[in-house]
Length: 110
Image (cartoon, rainbow, N blue to C red; front, side):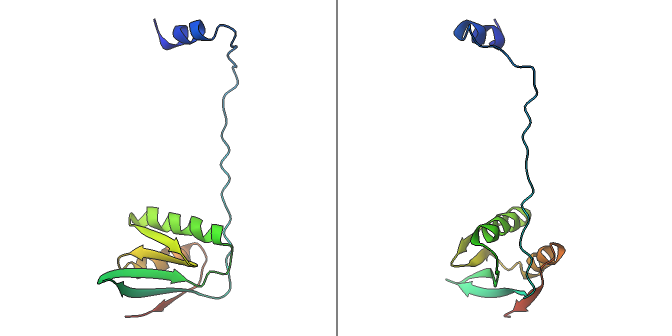
């Protein structure tokens, strides 16, 4: 007895629709600002961190950008107090990603 037959026994009045399920994913458009975003390097509790700040758009857009950066670089990080905090020194790679998206960046720190 396969799964379809078991489901028919459990739900005899259910009608199967033949329409394919479509899931629409809309690409979220980020606000690109004129002022540069600041990408700086700090050591916090003895560990290197990269901090991105200076975004003028909404916090939700900045959170989406943080998630995208973390997934592309395969690193940990967080969004806190209007800043993206990435574990490790990834300034060059992050600046390249942001510039590819159309953002202006400014490198600050050692």
